Image (cartoon, rainbow, N blue to C red; front, side, top):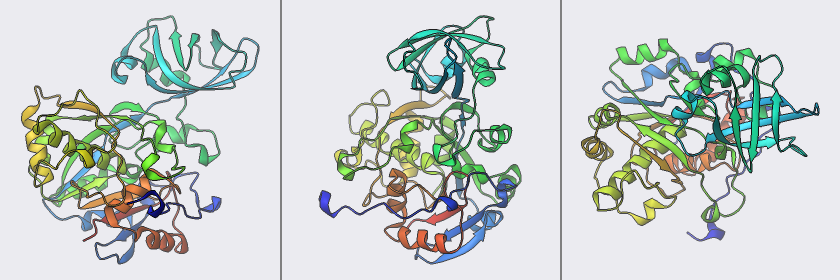
Length: 389
């Protein structure tokens, strides 16, 4: 497909349709169900257990959002905003358990004339010494606490900028999924925000198998498409897959995936297995943006790829890898029969995933959602998309 023939992923999203706060209850959101025929049924999240076949799988992303936004005061009294992205030179799990000092890559706002020195975080009770090293920051503190504990005390949940408000106490709970376990994201896997322990129990009682992956969501998820898809540079994100999860996936023919992050993790695993089996590198080499154009599919079904990866695992911990995979129109989704997701930002690479899942009919589905009063983006309503025939 030439650059000039690539479709547009823009649509008009009025600001009053962007949800700045969640529904009163997690499962109180609406659900737009798009069947594989393209037909649309308006439902509610509580309907979800009855829409998933028995003996099918439901896979979620158990990443946990960091309190990654720090509002500090410089010695001169000026405000300084820090958004921590990822630790430099070590996995996030190690960095959060580490004592002083630690180094993180970060976005720095209000940093004019500030190079280094002690920063005051009002009402935190902790004094940080922060040394600036280009786009990285070296944090030092006293008291022996792990950095994760310090960050919980000093930082705030980094709400997306389109919410146009500061995070409050409510967001510390509602901007995390009920199954969040692995700290490392700067944005929530928002489709999972609708799920409750009760809903998950109802699905389990009906025979649905639940499993988990981890993809730590980076700030690149907000980077819009600003030209031809072919020239878009996809950010890398870290994924973790346990051996237990891979073995469970190897026994499933029908899979519902919660969120584009979970889908991207599983699709990346398929291509990792295909590359590795054909004699290419294993998980130590990142998954390339266009690997699906460079490597032949090595397995007839996704479950076969999951079984092969499970056999390669040297321990129960499974494997981790970095993915740059970019899913675009024409890509054949390997893992999921259904995708539960929220409504995404115009010109988002996430809309490319939606089109790969259900075809160009997403535009008509989004128009229906707009006409029917659905709420959009992170705290908005959800849609259940069946893979197009």
